[in-house]
Amino acid sequence: MPADRYREAGVDLDAGARATAKIAELAASTRTSLSWGKVGGFGGMVRVPPDVRDPILVMSTDSVGTKVLVAAGANRHDTIGEDLVNHCVNDILVHAARPIAFLDYVAVASVDPDTVAAIVEGVARGCRAHNMALAGGEVAEMPDLYQPGHYDLAGTILGVVSEGDALHGDRVRPGDVLVGYASTGLHTNGYSLARRIIFDQLGLEMTSEIPELGTSTADALLTVHRSYHASVSSVLPCVHGLAHITGGGLPGNLSRSLPDGCGASIDTSSWQVPPLFTFLQEGGNVERNEMFDVFNMGIGLVAIVPSDAVDEVQTAARGADVSTWVIGEVVQGQGVQLH
Image (tube, rainbow, N blue to C red; front, side):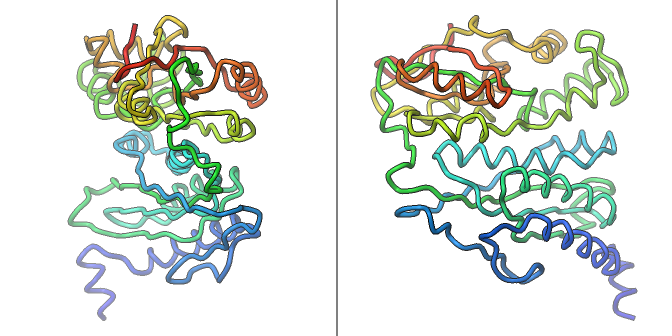
């Protein structure tokens, strides 16, 4: 039978069908008032929210990088999808966009329905937390491309913002204050270096307890990437700019939200760098500048606000249980300077 030959080639259509059935249930759990069409179609459909004046659609695509190798190594797959959603939510939040739909892409060596369902369970949980529809996706089985037990995970988010409310960084002025929001760990960046330090240089295992952190290796590395939507959305009208601190760290990402003629001065002593980053720096003998170029160093988002809005912005963050610090200011010039 043709299906048997395909299975011999490494692709199991029956396992794929079982995984698809589980995914359909999870996708159905995320449907919102904007959802349109049936689950399982060739394309996902959502309405543009009727309450948004002069709507602009904001889109972003990203992945969780080599954090998937940690999830696979620990055999814990139910949070990596939430990492992906929160990362993408933050990326469009930078432009003041409200998330309305999400698409996921899971590529595997071979389909294990339970593993795929656990991955998408995390995606669906992240979508429900943001009242966002999981409008569609894809599970691709490619045994000749991926090693057994390995997979990749990526997603595309669709958001919407009123044209007059969108943030581009053009409102930023010298004298604006930089408010840093606490991260929950590595988030989804720097894992290639972190894994090299922890597993290759220090010889630790997933189950190893790290006294300096008071937790296991797996727990430290799989902490979920924080979403800042709840801590920022209510104060967006008084924000001049936002920067999601991902690959490239504070210097590489904050500069993307600064207009020509504006730089940033950051006082790195204004917050306590979490122990995980100190552990990695010392264990890997990594120079300070490289740490700030690779990792978020405890700051997952930066809001650029006028001085008279700082209290309001920090109060909103506290209401969402997110710690913040005034970490610097916008200055005339170019680039991001760390002091």
